Length: 188
Image (cartoon, rainbow, N blue to C red; front, side, top):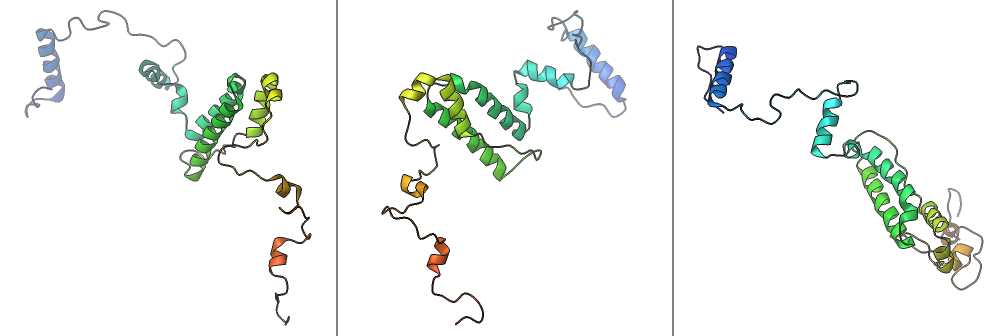
């Protein structure tokens, strides 16, 4: 940067003087692209071409410039396409867990446009992986097919019986807890 503009000189004459001084010093000699025409845009100039050119020059993908919900939707769609390429069911579970964790994190404090992003269905992804790997899926059927961070439901609880093997009384638990107590006005 050069000195400040003198008080009695206009900006245009001062700038012209600065350019002339730099040209005399040879500051504009041997610049890259000297004597070549400026690149012309191939497609229509829609006013946004400069940002596409900048992103291309800097190596930034267009997906990184998307709002978070749209980027998460694209990642979920891409996961559905790449599931058959994963090596094991555990890799599928881990990938689904990671994307669902990002979606839940975004849902807690949504930044950007209010676009609903559904969670990725683990069962659908596992079914797609098993369809692409039938030999592995038949040879190894896990007893517990659940994702990370979920609780397993014992078979006795899933069938509706108590842990001792006896069937429940048929009443909701809250009724059994409050049995014998008066619940309304006028009851003694």
